[in-house]
Length: 382
Image (tube, rainbow, N blue to C red; front, side, top):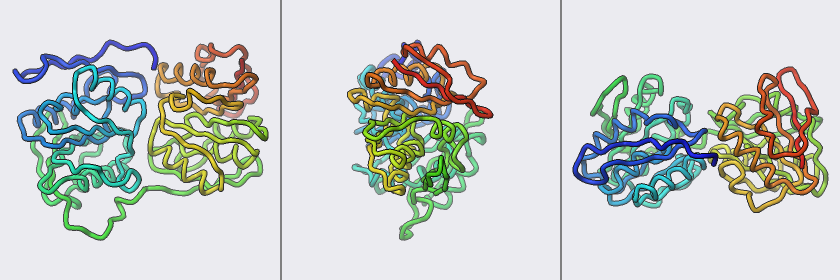
């Protein structure tokens, strides 16, 4: 990752445990500049409780698991983001906390059943988590509880409080509000409700869309919350139509989302296809997209190029998440330059209004090779 920010410091108001905790954060991770109030509300309520085996769902950078580690029998921190997982591991080690970290979607129907039932589960959904995904994660967290276990969910109206309350009322045995502050509510639920033979809201929330790019028909598997989940976006289409992919190329779809570029590459040339994304749900969708199109390839959940740092690629295709911050963009393009084979080509699409020149510094040559209504394609090489 890029150069460190100053860590966030959380002081302890009790005699037990460390006097303070330090948490490293980074661009591209939620609540990077300040602690999430919902997580702090959950911490304060749980501090003096019998926690037992603790499971956190959708962790940002490990606050709940790290702080409660000394009071829990065990801690398992889960997050769909590879970048967040790396921060959770770093912060657990830096604060001397014994906490296992998993990169997982939070959906048991994709991840599989929990290895160890939890006595306490904590879920603080992010503001931009689609309700369709959040409620499924909620149900999976309930299903992971041991007999007598408790799920604590912190939310506010802006993060879907009412919808989560409704979901818990439907899925849990009991639900109550146990704390409130500054618009946030902490709900306690026990359950799940009686077995129902498999509920639809626990199933993978995948949808399918069709697209034709340069005469090649694609069947794309998407999920709520993924970029351009409803239809192939114009930027990705422009990049696919512009890039040159040759037989024998090793091709990397960097920030693959649900894998349209990887599928297109595999259908347009006899090439070796790789795809990587920070989001485990995106990677799960990309695997299904490749399978739906009969394309063999490898899909990884990894932060930028961390999962392919030892590989070498003739062609890199990237529609980067420009909203994720300068740190993510710098890591992405520096990593792309590092894994590019001699004579290789890196094709990047971005909105025409953005000036990303500084991030192309690791490359010797950069040129604009296509211009669309809203996007440009840049070709970078050594």
